[in-house]
Length: 274
Image (tube, rainbow, N blue to C red; front, side, top):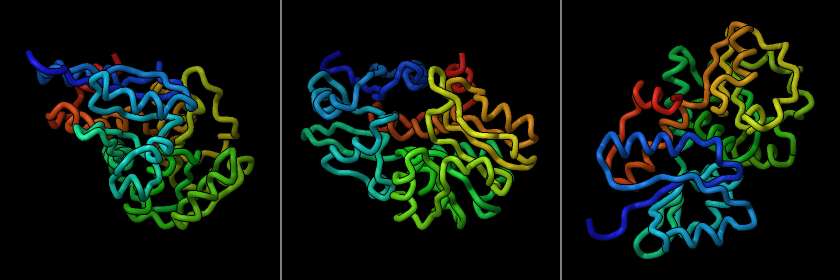
């Protein structure tokens, strides 16, 4: 073999919990492709300098996770219209001319998984509560509105961040401390924060108001069954985990970096969970 073996990875802080290396590794083996996909823990202060060094080491691109998605868009030389609309990027591609191209596949992954897991769910059926105001929240809100949702409410521990999204997406906000009092009015709840993730604090809110019939999705996938999802199932809600979103959002990056459109199937899910 001549030339460099393509390298890709996932960058974040923390990143040790990420299942992306297992996911992409499964596809690389399945399709018999040369290449490697690795986790890269990068602190916020080092993000830009490390990212700009990666192409010199043979990297063709990276996925971006918390807390770097907004910063990733800022440092890119060019970006997709959808990433610009969301205001965050979860994919960076290092082009041969030395430029960085930013994209966002989170919205696609979010809707594809939600509709697959809750076939009767409709964005127009009622109010949607989005917890968090980071890059993932921006992608979720954009996807909901594009899909026809007319009543999206955002709650975040830092209220100004929620208000920033609401001001450009025509949504409303609610104080983080008041979320428990409006839960029963919501048709759908989506947690986009890292709260409830392995090693992180749980969601600090009263979930006793969850009524049966709601759809509750948690973007956290480590652990696969968060406290939020467990409480939702107990209340008779449709509980949707975050793993499927991870699987679907990974497809565009793998195709771009390794040249094959991969399939999201039951075997992939078993491999990632295993």
